[in-house]
Length: 189
Image (cartoon, rainbow, N blue to C red; front, side, top):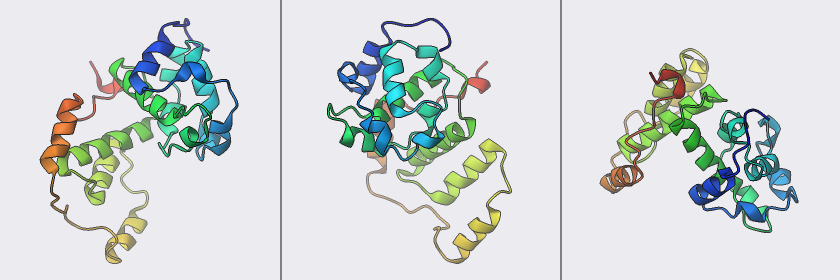
C-alpha cells in the first residue's frame, strides 16, 4: 500500500464506473476467469478490494489497471454483476486526469494511439494506429517483418475506409469531453 487511505474512493469509483463495488464479497470468480490476471500486479479481486479499502495511490499507479483488456469475463462470472473492466476504465481515466505516472507506459501509448485513431477515422485503421504507436513508444523496428508479411498478404488495408456515422463518433468524443486522450503524465508541464 502506498499513501494515505481515501475513504471516499469507493464511492467515487462506483459512481464513475457504474459498478456496485460495495456488494463484492471476494468470491474471486472474477480473478479465476480473467485471461490477463497473470500479468497484473494486482488481480481483479484485489483491485476491487483495494478500491473498497481506499487505496487510491497504489491503484492509480499500478500496472493492473492498464493490463485489463475489457473482455468483461469478470462481470459475467460475478454473482453481483461487478465488471472490473469498467472499474479499470474509471481508474485509468482518473490516473490520467490526476497526472499519475502510468504503471504500464507502453500500454498507455497504445491506448492513446487507439483512441486517436478511432476519433480520426470513426473506426480503427490498423496501419495508422501502428505507425502512431511505434512513433510514440520509440519502438520503430520490432515486428517490422510481421508487418511486411501482413501487408503482402493484404491483411492490412493500406488506406482507411470511409464509414457512415463518422460524425456521430466525433460527437461521442465531444460529449465525453475526450478531444483525444489527455497528455500522459510525464509530458505534462
